[in-house]
Amino acid sequence: MESLTRNDGRGADLAQPFVDALPVHGASVSTLGTLLGTGTVSATDQQAARIDELQFDLGEGPCWDAMLAAAPVLEPDIRNSPGRVWPAFSEAIRSENIGAIFAFPLVVGPLHLGAVDLYCSTPQGLSAADTQRSEALSAVVGRLVLRRALAQLDQPESLDPNDPFFRRTLHQATGMVLAQLNIPPDDARLVIQAHAFATSRPVQAVAEDILARRLDFSVSDSSTGGPHD
Image (cartoon, rainbow, N blue to C red):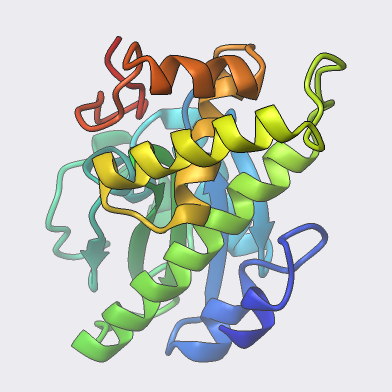
């Protein structure tokens, strides 16, 4: 956890801390859906990356369910007694050295970004403490993944972060979003920036719409995290 919180996510190995902290054999971090696209951000090994690849290609599996429901999907014996039905994915992993899969969502406010997949080569469960630890790590990784994606964007020329008016507008809009979603200020700012990215608009324009109450994040679509106009 400390190694994650010390950096901004760029160039960091986001998957390895899960293996270091939990009784699992491998881990992967992936983005899913339209906001950041679908792909593996970080994986500890080829097997972890393979689990991601199968789910991307088939459009089903624990990572999709975890992201869409914003809740963990725990499969301690996925090959012999799966708790959910994934016809294509279950068939695909029969030839893989996988006994258990645990998927945790990457969520920042209303934004469903992707998921973390943890696997074990033999059937086994996660304790309540391990599940809580996984959720805490996933919360940190979700923020880092979003920050990394936003940092790679070119900032519009019309937006000057040193402009006092812009800073004041963004600060006020951040306050409204954190009140709407009951999330920390840093997460509220990320939500605003991510919405600007998703809609190809300047951050200042989005902030102004929030202040004018043309955008409201308090009730949003569960799959995209989009606000109501």
